[in-house]
Length: 310
Image (cartoon, rainbow, N blue to C red; front, top):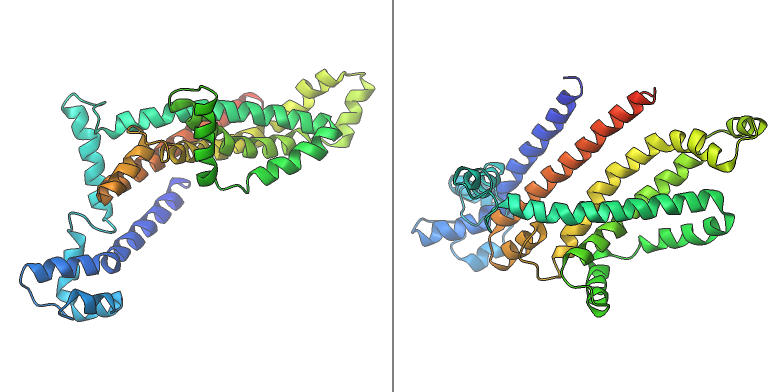
């Protein structure tokens, strides 16, 4: 409960801010609909309303503010509307026996999750190998690390189309591989930096002690450096899995994909259905939370078995 209470407090505060933000975000659309229904609004024309601040519109039309919370296509939906859309595209699909139909977010989440896990595996592997090379080779440390840092300054939205085009040029068919590469691109850097720090965390006295025992470099790695780096590894993996999910969703946007959470966001934007966009975003947030939670449980179990405090 001590850990849960702060989380629930922050969640309640975010929901409160969300509800308060709905009114100013939707007031213009709400007044347009109210005007079309024949009610009087102030100012009377949409041109004048566009030139008026939302706060003045809310003050002059306070009786119509509630209409902004019940729009079919709001600029900013309420949490209840997003929850209803989530239920319609998940729970109702399960009840009807179609959990993986084309409109089901469960199906789209599974497609996104597959590419995320492949990208996470690839990025983690590259990050681990790069960290080991940096720790044991001064040449690699001087050459690889600066380029790894520079690579993160390239916007992923600019890099994603390039990866997709290059993948098609070398004969890689399908959208899964480019998405996994984009996912790995965002994932490997946290693992690289975290594991480099973790492998370098043993004190000089500990390394000297192993040398007095005539331990080989391989023995020093498995007996000292690797165990000492485990807490750093799991911290990096939590960041990496969330970044990998973001990379997969971004990778689905320029590919013209029809499946995946990124595709749902793109389709919702093209057809002007904000609820579909927000439902996909909420599902992505829950999926990221689930993945990070699973890694946290694995971390606790691993550190407990190693005799460390989680």
